[in-house]
Length: 341
Image 1 (cartoon, helix red, strand yellow):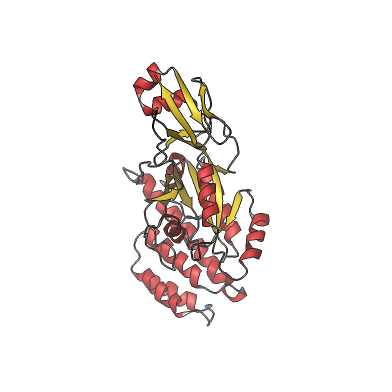
Image 2 (cartoon, rainbow, N blue to C red):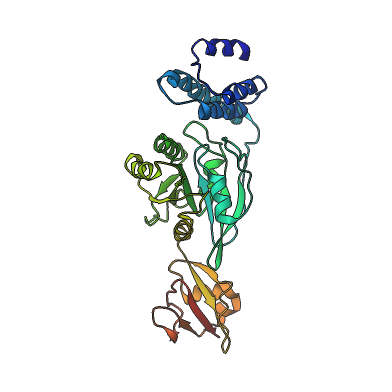
């Protein structure tokens, strides 16, 4: 079947296809599952030059991706146990990376965390979700590197992983002129699965959590020619507005701003404990939800503290210098708290 299809494709193939195309196409002979076929189709699309002479060829592969996805979903519907992927949370919060093939998610994870995920210049290098810890000042934030997704290709477990996470880091490819439409397709597919991605500081009704996730957009590959114009165009073309940060995983440009933006997604405060008569322990803060009180911190320290707490003293940048506060006092980021029982 594959041989007959290959002969048919060659009738209208343009002559300027790169050598990589024919090598990848040969892999179709050994592809057995819909997932394997889709990965090969995506890699073929990635190496095909985009011009009028290749429009029909690219459209054909996109149709095949849609058909293979439908076949895969039918197989999963009839399976006894659907595949699941779950990553236990760690650190100050869990943020899932979401993006299309070849957007550079793994390269970005490597640049942000110092870890060494597998990185290659072809799509679908990442096949399973993998956790890495990103340092930000005095805390660690868990980033989940994930396989690429599109409007046509999304594993059944993927939306569930997004639901479980605290926030989303959406990754765009400034080198791809179709990146806005690809991201819109991903957002629509997630919405079909009851997951909405929203701006970083949008309020979320309690009854909708965990189906709405605050999101920041990392526009990767700022180091390429034309990146500034592509970044401006992305803001115009993308249907859903997000905070956009232009970054380069190669040069490191914009990464510090991205780290701070990711921390902001979590809506948490860092609070340092202080034992009376001693210095504050600023190397290991308690991470509490925004709006937490002195009593919330006492519960985080130990059950006995919450039961016996009388008052607390607080030091912070807003002017409190060991002032005595009551249990209902709302804590701010980087407050130093001394609990008295």
